[in-house]
Amino acid sequence: MNIFKSHFWYHKNQRNGIFILIILIVIFQFIIVFVDFSSEEKVDTNSPKIIAFHHQIDSLRKINLENKRLKIFPFNPNYITDYKGAQLGMSLVEIDKLLAFRKTGKFINSEKEFQKVTSISDSLLHSISPYFKFPDWVVKKKQNRQLSTSRDTRLFAKKSKYILTSTDINIAVKDDLKTINGIGEKLSERIIKYRSKLQGFSTPDQLYEVWGLGAEVVVKVLLVFKVVKLPNIQKINVNTVSFKELLKNPYIDYELCKKIFNYKDEVAEMQDISELKNIIGFPLDLYDRIVLYLVAE
Image (cartoon, rainbow, N blue to C red; front, side, top):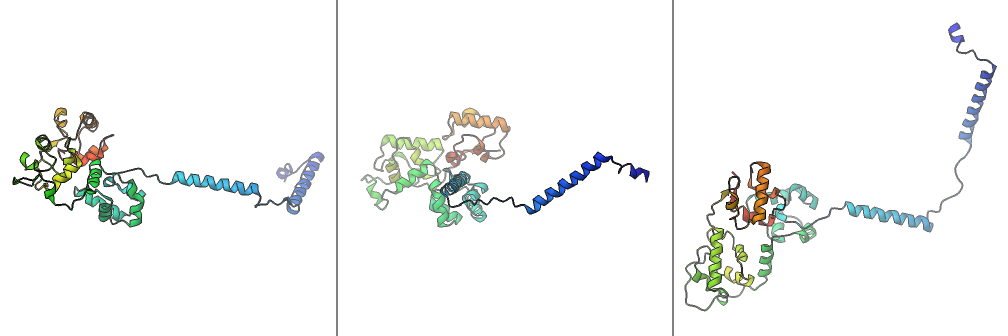
C-alpha cells in the first residue's frame, strides 16, 4: 500500500490545480456538444461570381483533357506496331491481320487496301486515314491514275510497223521503248542504263525514278510494258560488305551509308536486316527498295 500511496499523495495546490483542470474539461465538452458553430450566412450558388468560377474550372478541365488526348502525326500504315495500333483504336485481330500481311513481304499503298487487309470499320478508317503517309512514288502513282487509262494503247505509241520484241520491261530493247510516244534515243538509253543499275525492275513504279522521264510518259510505258519476270538480284551481306560496295546500292547515298556503318559498329553484327529501321534517320519509305539488295547473315 505504501507503493501506491506515494503516487496519490498531493499537497493542497496540486489538488486545486487538478480540480480546476477537470472543471475546464467539462466546460469544453459542454461547449462542443451544445453550442452551434455553423454560420447562418448562406452562399448563393447562382451568383455571377460563383457561376464565373465554375466556368473557369470547366475551361481548365477541357484544356487538361485536350492535352491528355492522343495526338496523331502522319505515319506510314505499313509500319504500325501493336502499341501504335491499340492507340489508334484497332483491335488485336485487325492488328494481327496487318502484321500477317506484312510478313508476306507485301505493302499497303492505299486507304482502301488498308481496310481490305485489316477489315477495320468505315468510321475508324475515316478517322485515321487522313494521317496516312505513303512514299512519294505511291503518291505519284495515285496522281497518274487520274489520267485516262481507257484509251487504246495505240494512242500512246508512235505509228510504226515495228513489232515489239517483248512487252517485259526487263527484256525490252531500246527500239521497243522508242515506240512509246515521248521516248527517244536518249530516254530509252537512260531507262536501260537505270535498269542495269537496279539489276532489273522489281516493280513497275521504279520507272518513276528514271531521271527526266515524266509521269505522263511512265503511264504510257506501263500501258504497254509490264514486269513479267522478276530480276535475279544478287544480294550482299550487310555485315561483311565494304563501304564502297554498299554505296553502289541505288537507294543508299553517302550519308545513309555512314549511318549504316556507324550502327554496325555499335551492334557488332546485325542479326536481321529489319534492324536497319532502328537507325536514326533511316528512310523508312525506301526500306522495301533497299532490302532488295541486302541480307543479314
